[in-house]
Length: 95
Length: 130
Image (cartoon, rainbow over all chains, first blue to last red; front, side, top):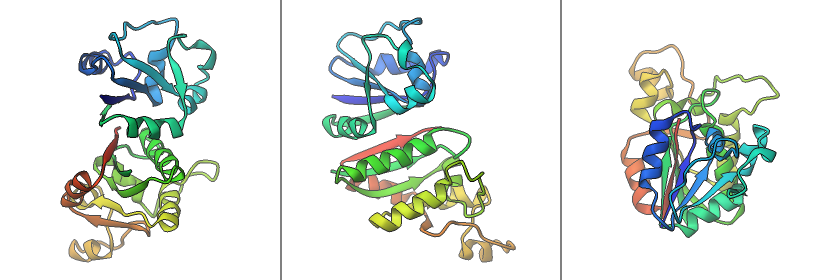
């Protein structure tokens, strides 16, 4: 299982497409920095089946998006980020 | 678990520079060890002793140095990426006959071999991109 991190907004469609194509069932996708804009409820993204999508709390809060996230996306803090790195065999950063 | 971090993001240009620092703090707080932090590409600007951000903004080179001191971290800056961007230590300043040097205390210039070694030795290598 792989942990993917994505740090760009969905307006970077090529990066988002490449990232989603690389995600397999059982992987986790962690949205960080401007990547948290991919979690907005008003612009739902078709996440690949079986992929756990979460967003980094501090980056969500820094952008004032707390109340605007899609309900399917959980928030994780910096400690959880480290924990996710341990739980997955490898980490791929999309940027 | 043994972590290493690879930092491509430059402070004040990309949040990745700060994300890497935050990750390192969280990592150490959980008792993991950080084998090396490798600064590459524009990320080398995070090791400048001459950066003078406003007082209400984080001074990342100083923060890294303090963290490195507390936890004996190995902060390595890619020498080729650094020298071509004007980040020099005393040796390189002498070699290129430059009037000054600006590598922050706590960092060292070295080659890509240090990145390869970190990838081999560490359980996880986390990249913070620009």
